[in-house]
Image 1 (tube, rainbow over the protein chains, first blue to last red):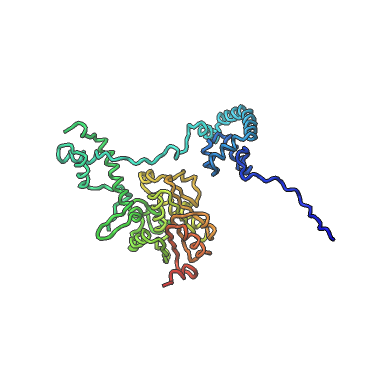
Image 2 (tube, each protein chain N blue to C red):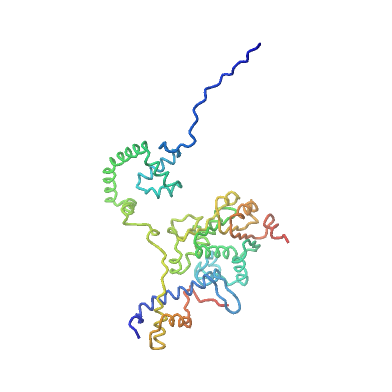
Length: 169
Length: 239
């Protein structure tokens, strides 16, 4: 009788848990993590970081709150804080030398200068109907009600704002 | 007479300005009907509110390079078509102002309707950039924007300073943009245009493939070209 050879099997590893939440470690790519940390260091808000990179706000919070990243961040901060005095002296020297780029950078950095689109908003001006009211008064010698002014406006000759004469051919 | 009803001269002048702007904008938006013809809004804007750029102004004896958009007889039909048809093929000859007209329509569209993306494609990126922002001389779209009255420019401001804009892009603060691209269907696939414009399609490689790539996403497609053999000619000669 031949004895069947028993195949040797590798011992099975323990089953991995189906979900990995609660472990506190982010599975986000390192490149994304460093981008988040970099933006966080440069005083960007978490909401802004999430919008720029295109990830959830929760992911941003998770990356920033990780212990290893916290240690990394504090290290960076310390390193940056050490060079701040030197940077300030350098900036002061450049400004006093009349370096135009540094002057504008400082003014933008201190929010004295802002980008035009940050403050400029197209606001539609609202009608007060003061114009037809005044015209009505000139014609009839009394101030009209709003309804009368709106009706009267339809009879006023229109003056169009164009570059040249209006072509009506 | 009640005291509340009285208005000051200053208030009256201010309201007159708003009234004049509103009346003009009404015509820019909806056009105007006169002498039995309807002049569409974009055409009314081109004719009365902005000017084109002419390189041949010296030979033509003009005072400067900027002149009003010409009153060509087919423009009313052309703009009516552009406002109503989702896909239009324009076979043309040279010097018909058709590229100007189509770019004018796209510029008007971007200003009036927020968050519109217009994609302008031609054989080379340099050529399509000339239709958008350009450098020197200014591109068609930028020339039309720049030649508007200041109150219209303030009404439809650009997102950033014109000097900072690249030659192939024009962006408004309302989120609208005109983007120039070079030939190739893959170039089109990168965008989701509202209006897709092809200039000189008969002389562009992969014109058919580009059209196919744009057709599922573009709300309107305007294809212009002079006569030439190929995909454009085949489509135009189909019955």
